[in-house]
Length: 106
Image (cartoon, rainbow, N blue to C red):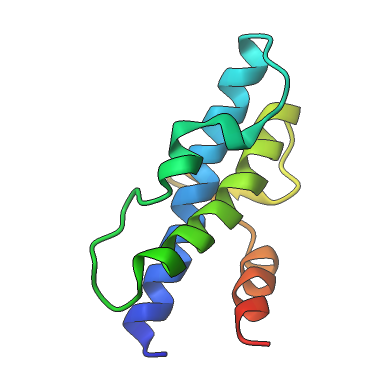
């Protein structure tokens, strides 16, 4: 895997985390039971995909990994898997990202 592909997979996880966090918070605010798989963003899982360096299915896998964790954080109002950076954006924690990316290579 080249650096461009690795960067794109990291982007997939981060974007998934942010989208999931927003979806989880919205479901909580609306009084819905937690169900990240019921979200359009999780089903589509291609937000940010540009068609270069990695297959769409691989990108979707990593987006969903981030989305699920972001959804759980957003729904439960916590930061177990991510935190806000200096620009106010939520990013998945480096240790969590490393664990997600490492599993694919086992």
